[in-house]
Image 1 (cartoon, rainbow, N blue to C red):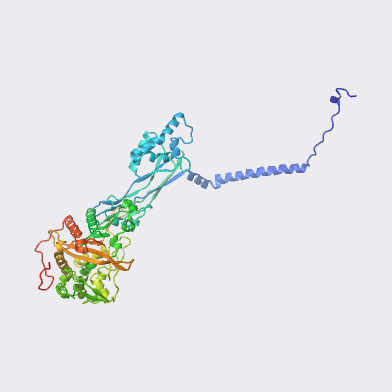
Image 2 (image 1 turned 90 degrees about the vertical axis):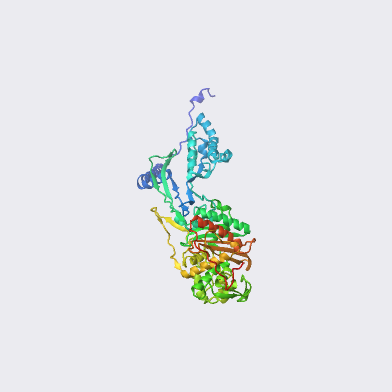
Length: 620
């Protein structure tokens, strides 16, 4: 029988003893642990040595890069001016305004703790900034608030406005500072501006969004006008630029400026006159040039329709190019000035050479008409030009060797670019050596055997008028050099195309033509004027057919000392079918303005009235 306290004094059962690991295995684990710790510390130490000693320079450079901000400093594009220094194209100092919505939302506190007053100021900041933008940029607050309050991706880089003048942005920043507001910044964004809008637009061209020239001189002279961008780099902290931090500055090099030979005042008037004539004639387009005969300087080069280079994207692409050098056409009877010049200079005819003019004449397998007078009329060579006889011109041209006659056309500049420096210039067409008889005939009177550009034909006739000396047409007066001086670009040397005696004969013959024109279309009060008209059928490549007319007129004055040339071409006029009625009035207006504008002395002495045929009075 057990007793109550036996359980306290009974012997306890023996506990099982856990078997001990062998001493060798315990030591191995400890050794492995120690080795692992040693390797980790060795790697850490090695990396510290690499960072602090071996790669110290590169690590420091990477850290500096993370703290450095760099900006491109755009170079200013060179200006383009007219002959009097009036600006035709310039680059204005403008910026685009960026908003940091996160900075605006906290009113500059960022991630720092905000007091109650900070929160109140931050809540009001977007509306206040929007009000400032409305004040200086226009629009409404709703135009700006979505960008000032944006959250999420891109919130720190919102474009608020573009092409804002730097002066206006400074006013905005002053207003922001007065209200203790932050969150707007700017980036340089120079803007190309054309103050006179469409005036000389085709010659000047435009600048594309990427900053390169897209047409006209802006394109052709892009390497001259474009400068070299600079760069600025400096250290920043979360609080902005570090005043005494490292910085580097490479100043931009601005582009060089170009002064043209154009007279912007005259150009504007020529533009208006040409536009009026094209609209009145219901033409497709028109071209006009006013040249200084003595120098080859282009004083005005116009076309209609034109465009506004400030907003060229809204224009018809066909109107962006300079038709005066890119669009060849059949010159019509204006070409007779060159043909008769060559024949007189070769000694084959004189102004009084008599020719019996048929109503029609076979050339190749076609019949050529357009004598301008009754069949069998006897005309002087002077009369052939005055009455614009196709058949009379052909008969006179057949006196010449075709190759010899062709060489004169080549010397006049036909079949070659003028080298005026405008993009897209074409050569026109001129039959090759040993041309067949029908090509010689067609070229002589300005038919479809030949095509020219406006500037090409104008320069050729200016050469005849200038005492027989050809000057290549010029558009660039000077280019500003890096040292600030101005230099004239290289130009082709003048060349003689006909003798001075031949020149005088042709001026007299052109004066007779002006006197013979219906209604004295080309007369300018106080001046002796020479003129020639042209009308030709328009060849349409798409249908390989003739459709519509090209009408033209050219004038030189004063005849006794030619100084100014005016040439107008109108394509596809439907109101009027002759150069004298379609283009003539525009030529007269432009010549009157140019002679007065440049103070050209008026003609003196009696004006000769020479007969156009033997024993024949002036035709009415």
